[in-house]
Length: 249
Image 1 (spheres, one colour):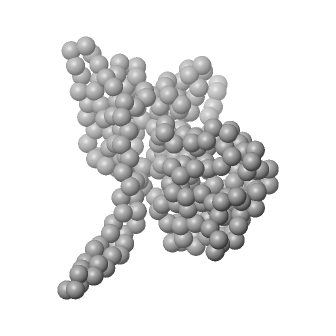
Image 2 (cartoon, helix red, strand yellow; image 1 turned 90 degrees about the vertical axis):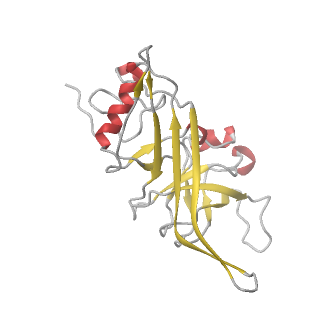
């Protein structure tokens, strides 16, 4: 008898097979790939209130937290391709239960050399970060800028904080400062550090030494609708699409 520790909580895709018992399982061991996506649409949603005074001056404020919205399209699927995804979602019962999704464009950082480094090495925060900040100084004692290159704007990351398991927000980098390129009014990063700017601002306080996950960061989401449906064409192919929204813990 082969036991497993937990059920997989990752939407099945070509990189995340699922076994018939609901476990994470390699295809070679009997797992089923989920199909790849034909389209991926990602929306960054800021809740901003704008008002103008009688003189025309603009007053803006953020009235609620940021969220990501994801739409996934699939090519027509055979039943073998369709069932791993559909039954995984049925188990979540609409918007009741959150799960994780890996988007192919963010599975690895943009720079291939940096992606290889972070696949087996973690950056950690060198100082704590308070909620509301949009900059972090991060480092790794084995990292060398000239050798391992750098993160780039557009890379996505999540935070693993041992003192706060509820920090499940996903962030996207907008600027990266290095030892060779840094704003003059700030402390220059060392050759083993990076200063990253990102969107949205930190949602929860981050402790010193928290892990910054660049390799295959995942979005924590729920389905936007509690109704799941599909269509079956005359060739016995299943047509299905999915709308998701971020769900923080």
